[in-house]
Image 1 (cartoon, rainbow, N blue to C red):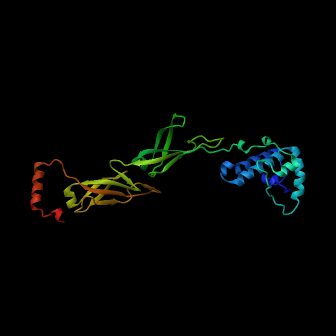
Image 2 (image 1 turned 90 degrees about the vertical axis):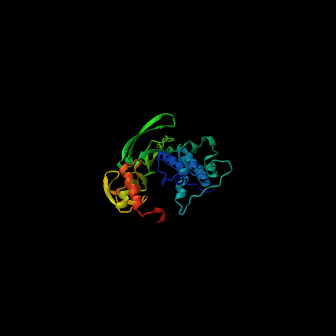
Image 3 (image 1 turned 180 degrees about the vertical axis):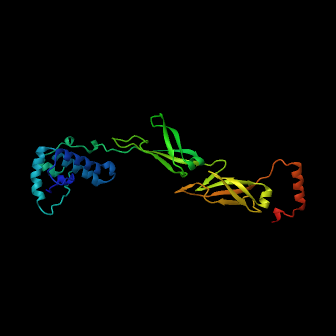
Length: 297
C-alpha cells in the first residue's frame, strides 16, 4: 500500500500545525483545485478527493496522532515521493484511508462544494454622447442609469480633457454585485464624441468649412478662421478652388503632453442668394469680358 502524505497534499511543510492552520490550508487547497475553476480537468477533481481525505484525517486529533506516527517514519526515508493511490469506483476515500482509519461514510467528509469561492461581479457597459468641446476641455457630467433592480441611479462622470472617441471610463465597484463576498464589478462608460455644426473630429484632426466669396477665391485673401479655442489668420492663395483644403498645424484636438492635431479647413465658394442691381451688372460685365470657361479646362 502506497503511503499518502496528507501534509504535502495540503501544502503544509510540517506536522507541527494547529487545527486552524489545517483548516486554512484546506480552504486554500480547495479554492486552488475547485472544479468550477478547473472545468474539464480530471486531475483537479481527483485532487479534491485527496484534499478532502487529508482534511478528514488531520482535523481529527485522534486520527492525526495515529497518522503522525506513520508520517514520521515515512518522511524519514530518502527520496520518498507522494503518489496517488488507486481508488475503487464510487469511493470518495482511498484504500490507504480505509485500511488505517476504517471505512468512512461519505456524508461525514468535507464537501468541497460547501466552500464558497468569492467571485467578482460582472462589469456593466454603457455609452454616453458628448460634444467635441466637452471632450476637448473636459467636463463633469451626471448620468442616470437603471440598475438590475429596476431603480434609477445617478453617477458623476469626470471626463478628462482630450479623451478619445470610443475610449472607456471605468467606475470601480459600480457594476453588478459580487458573489460570496467577491468585489462588485465595474461600470464601463464608452465615450462617443458627436460632431458639431462647425467641427468634425477625425483622429486628432478637426475638420471645418471655410466659406469664401468668388472674388476672394479668384484674387486671394487673408481670412480669420475659428478654431476650437481661438482664432487663426490664414492666407487663401489666388485661384483657390472649391473643395481644396488648407491645413492649420497644431490647432486640432488634444493628443496629450500639450501636443495637438491639425485644423483642416475645406474651402467652399459661396454665392450670394440675393444680388443688388449693381452686382448683377458687374457679373454681366465679367461674363462679357472673361474668357474663362471651367468646362473647357
